[in-house]
Amino acid sequence: MIRLPDHDALFPAIGLYVHFPFCAKKCSYCDFPSFAGQDDQMDAYLGALEREIAAAPRRHVRTVFLGGGTPSYVPGPWMERIMAAIHARFDLLPGAEVTMEANPGNERLHQNEEWRRYRAMGITRISMGVQSFDPAILQALGRIHSPGEALETVAAVQAAGFDSASIDLMYGLPGQSVETWRSTLQQAVALGLPHLSAYSLIVEPHTPFDALERQGKLKLPSEDQERGMAAVAEEVLGSAGYAQYEISNWAQPGFESRHNTVYWLNEPWLGLGSGSHSYYQRRRWANATTIKAYIEGGPTPMPEAPQDLTAELEETMFMGLRLTREGVTDARFRQRFGVGLLDVYGDRITKLGDLVTWENERLTLSKGGLPLGNEVFEEFLEPNLGPSTAPASA
Ligand code: SF4
Image (cartoon, rainbow, N blue to C red; front, top):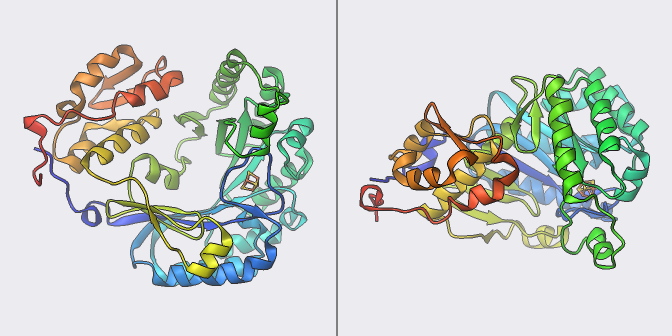
């Protein structure tokens, strides 16, 4: 019989996401809640953020993610204040992972002292938006930096002693070929960073790329070429010693993103700042998206889809299967729901055949299932909650 243990008891330490919505310039593909030309709002925004942090539930925290937008665009003294507010409100566990996102194209970030200052604030990991080492592609994306500036920024991060650092790369881009993508991957590998993310472009509504696509002016690689690019990533990163531990993420052993793993394991986190999302005590909500609304009205959280048992089962499966090695284990599933994975999903797993692998009480996407992830995920919608799995509290 399914029983849902108290979330706070099940997850005594949570993740924390803190949003910085400022960017030097809006990129052509970006639909994140980030804004250029609103630096005059920074002071008021960060004050509102401090207030939201001070009013948040006091919890043990095992990961913090300072995301955006571009957190590295915020002057260092302000980041110090926000980090101090986080430390004052939450109990960060020893060894907590504290990641800050950064973007190249800011001369301040070429200096090692800037990065030493971030380390002194308690930031332990840097995630950089590099996207490509091809200047023409960077220009097409509307990025503000050259490949050389990205390299300088990475060098300064490394010189300041950040052992844990990652760069984001993109493929399936206008003007990109399999060979230019290979070259970007090879240059990325040469940096010797322990983590890399490789995302395929999705043209999001209401972005400049969306408008260009509608006008027939966005020349994207074919689906075949894109599949070829995914295969090249596997080949180049795999032979350089990185393991693909999530659909878009690669790491050397021990350097997987612990914060993003909170999302993939469908565990709770609090989101603070405009446009942030939260999943906490079995509720999901999102804060006001614009800087102005957040400053004037406070967080004003808006509830998202209802979080009933079905939603919790579905999310646990979709997100868990993104973890290509960890997958969804029967042990975690039992701890969370009080029944076995096969009790709820045995028939679906049989139906999926060789698209998934069930081995050592662990369900993962198979090599053949990996490119068909979305089709596999759909099978886990609307679980059959028969008499043996009926919720105890229903
Ligand atoms: S730097 Fe990042 S958040 Fe800012 S506009 Fe570009 S993609 Fe969006």
